Each structure stands twice: as C-alpha cells, then as structure tokens.
Image (cartoon, rainbow, N blue to C red; front, side, top):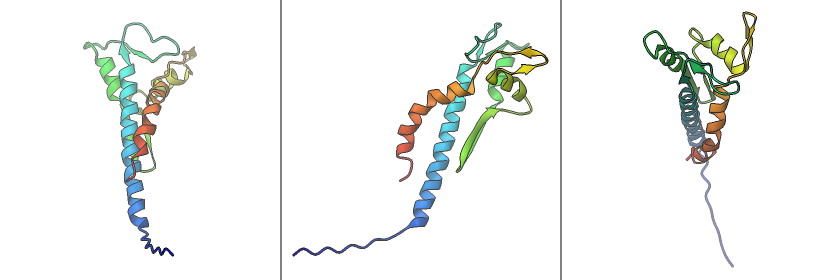
Length: 136
C-alpha cells in the first residue's frame, strides 16, 4: 500500500501580480523594439521612398533636421493592457498617415509607403521567444 499526501497553497494575488508585471515589461519592450525598427527604416534622401517601401526624409535646412524631426516624433506608450506606437499628433501625424496608408491629400494621391506595419512584422518572430518566459 502506498500513501500520498499533498498540500496545495493558492496564491492568486502573487500570480496576478506576476502576470501584470510580465505583461507590462513585455508590451513596453515590444513597443520600444517596434519603434526602433520603424525609426531605422526611415532614411534621408532627396528622392521619395519607393512605393511599398518605407518613407524617405528630405534633408532639412540645417542638414538632416527633417530626418531628426521625423525620428524624434515617433513615440510609444505601454501599460499592462497593451501598447501604442506612432508619430506625434502635433507634428507629423497627418503626413505620416497619408504615406502609411496611401491616402489622398489636397487632391494628390500618395502611394502607400508603410513604415509601421513592416516594423511590426520584422519584430513579431522575436516576441514569441521573449514572451515565453515573461511570467515567473
């Protein structure tokens, strides 16, 4: 005859705290990574980016000021429920939305030059591996 005795201790508060902390860290890291990938894809050039590829930033009056402004205006915010990544509303949001989705502005049709979607797609494969051990 074999005897077995166990004691189960439930600690839902600790588990819930670990889940929230892991989610925030994961979302924050993912958002920062996607932002960096999008920033790195914006290059400075006198010519527009190819349709279907990322945008090109024209050189600014002080040599590169246009590129720096675009890169600085790309922000992210993360909390335990998710993350938002995009261009600052007061600076470049309409211009970037036009290029990202290929919209018409002022009677001119702009070809689609996505920046954010490719950045997300480049980062997705890595996130599964990193999030696997996020909750301990």
